[in-house]
Structure formats: C-alpha cells, structure tokens
Amino acid sequence: MIDVIVAGGGPTGMMLASELRLHGVHVLVVEKDAEPTEVVRSLGLHARSVEVMDQRGMLERFLALGKQYPVGGFFAGIPKPSPERLDTAHPYTLGIPQTTTDRLLTEHAIEVGVELRRGCELVGLSQDEDGVTVELADGTELRSRYLVGCDGGRSTVRKLLGIAFPGEPARVEALLGEMTLTASLETITEVNTEVRKTQLMFGAGPLGDGVYRVVVPAAGLAENPRVPPTFEEFKRQLQVTAGTDLGAHSPRWLSRFGDATRLAERYRAGRVLLAGDAAHIHPPTGGQGLNLGIQDSFNLGWKLAAELNGWAPEGLLDSYHTERRPVAADVLDLTRAQMTLMSLEPGPQAVRRLVSELMDFEDANRYLTEKIIAIGIRYDFGEGHELLGRRLRDVELKRGRLYELMHEGRGLLLDQTGGLSVAGWADRVDHVVDVSEELDLPAALLRPDGHVAWVGEDQEDLLSHLPKWFGAAAS
Image 1 (cartoon, rainbow, N blue to C red):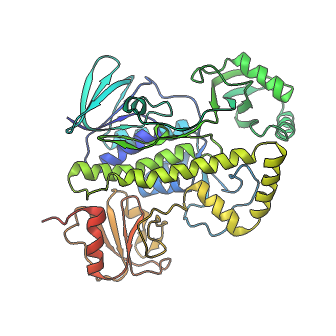
Image 2: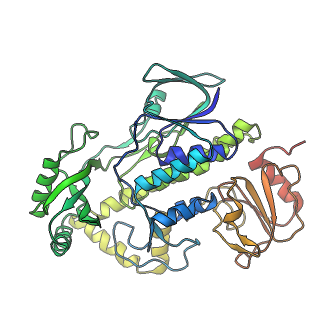
Image 3: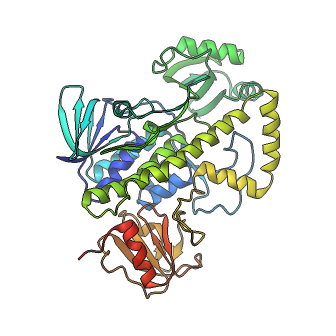
C-alpha cells in the first residue's frame, strides 16, 4: 500500500510530496496532464515562500533563475515604497515564472524520491478506516493510507468528497497570454499608461525578444472558462480596450481567468485532505495564490508524516484545517478588498484614495504588506511570548544561519542557555546550542515549519510542551 497519493503535480502537490519524503513517506503523485503546462499564471514568490525554500535548502536554485524586486505596491496596485524593518531576512519579491517554479519543485521532488506519474487522471475514490482506494481514468485502482487533493480550483477530489465550496462566482473575466508585439516600446508604454487610467486589469509587460505578457478584460463571461480564448478573440479585445492590437502575433499560449472567490468548508474528510486551489480560489490580485498553496503544503507535510510514522499527538493532523483555513479566509477577504479598490466607480475610488493616504503611515503600509507576503501570520497557540505562533525569521547564529539547520524538516530547539534537553524526542527534534545577537530570548522550540511552539528557559515547562507538537517521548 502507498502511504500517500497526491492528486495534482503543480507547485502545491510537488511541495507536499517533497515534505513527506523528508520523513520517509512513500508518495505517489498522479497528474492528469501528460506534459507540464506552458501557461504562466504566477510571476513570483513572496517573502514567506522564499523563506520556505530557504528552510528546505532550495533557495539558491530559485535565486539563480529569478530576479529580486521591492515588495512595495502590491496592495491593490497602490504605488507605495517598501516598508522598512520587515520581519524577514528576505525583504523582496522573487520574480520567477510559474513554469520555472514548477520545474524546480518537480526536480527537487524527484531527487528526494517522489514518484510522479503523468497522464494519470483521478476519476473516483472511496475510503474506509484503513485507507483510500483511488480509481484512475484507465481503470487502474490504487490503494493508499491517505489521499491529498492538490488538483486545482475545479478539484475532482473535492467534488467526489462532496465538500461544499461556497463563495462568489466570477463576475468579470480577463484574457491572459504571451505573444510577440511589433509596436514600439514607446507606443506600448503610452498605451499601458493611458488604458490603465480606466482599465486596471489591462497590461502588457515585456519578457524579452519582443515577447510580452498581455492581460486584457474579456467581453464577458465565457460559457466554459476552461476553454482558452482564440487569438482572434484576444486581438479583438485589444482593439476594443486599447484601440490597437499592438501588432500582436505568434502567441505562445492563451488563457482566461475570472474573479471567482470560494473557500472549502473543510480541509479534511477522513483520510482525504485538500490543499492549494482545491481548497480556495480567488482573483490573482496581490499574487498570493501559488504562495498560499505552497504554504499549505509546508504546514500539512510534517503533520501528515507524523501521523503516518506513528508519533503524531492527538489533533495534530486536524490542526492543518484549524490553522490554514483562517489564513485562506483572510487572503480571500484581502483579495475582495483589493478588487473593490480597483473598481473605477466613484465610491471605491474614494475609498482607494483614503487607503492610499493611510498607507503613507509606515505602520499601515507594513501591516498591509505583511498580509500580502504572509510574514504576519500568527497561529493561535494560546497566551504567551509575542513570538508564540509566529514563524521565526532566519537569524545569524555564531555558527551559521538558523534556516541552514532546518533542511531536514525536523523540529528544532534553539537553546541560548545551554542548559536544556530534548532527550526522548531526539529522533524528531534537533537540539542546537548556539546564540544570536538578533534574539532576546533564552530558548525557542520551533516546529518543522519554523513556527514558534514555546519560548522559555525552564526544562519542566519545555517537557510539558514537547508532547503537544511532537508526541510522546521515545521509550
């Protein structure tokens, strides 16, 4: 029997599969598409996702193929500078196309032993107290202990489970594609500037060699949003919106997207879980979708592995839902707010001007920016130290960096006192005796995802908290 079948080989699925493999879990990823997609929906990684890659030793690969940009101006496209003193060692957005992110995550997953089967579509599932039976389109049946649906906004897994997906349907739609434009850069810049005065969903950004990424409002909602627009439809909408098709020709790919906003009522049904777009969808404003899915997987991976490996404390796997669903709900609200502020109606424009004025205050700018880049998240671990429930940023130690010590996906006790012990949990928690001038605390217990589970210096107090996250001590 397979330990975990992951349905969907996109960024969420491959990140989850890699996390599970760190703990020796047998993972099979089934992906219905025979070849990787050429469609580039996401253009980069926000700071928290950059931290995730750093914590798992993958960041150098991404930095080599990406470009660092300031984080300012992401909230509803309101132009503001990057806030000062962001709580991260990576205060930038890493510009990198989703196709490259997909490839890097897939390469890493294969390296750590993930099995990937392309051209395998999941069409049915059933579960019992011992596992899940998965039916593929070719009639093959597979058996696993758990199944995770990472199969996108139209998730087959979610539909087969009957999990409700309430929210708002798409009201507007946009066309997206990459194509060659023969108009001059000066003309394209002028058109961009003029059209965006009345159409904030319009844009043509250069990719090099005369190729541009173009987004333009659609004429209306398509009967079937899965069907990409024709190139003639795309050029017609360019003419309608901008008064010119900018000499567009030779499209690489074309797609469409809407502003539907939905959130799964639950992230778990027995031995089946949901992650990424299968659990939540929203417009791309702010660029949070891919990042949210990667961070779902980062939260779920170690918890599901703990369950499979027999040391998970009661309720650990269910904490995936209780921690990540509120994060998604907050992202959906943040996206709704941004979409409202991007409306050209007088009321929303008045609110946009007010928000813009408020963002001139450094604290307000930082607050909204940290929401977008996901470094302001704090899970509810109860009362305690101000860092409790937050992820700890990378800090310099006397013997290196904190994140360099987290590549294996284990818990970590950063002990600046030298007087503590994790005896009984050493198979799950690393004990690092070191100091950092950046941290004003005696010791901190970190979960495998870097969130602070305990702060203190008393051994007995530590022993009362270790079982909550890392199960019973080994005998």
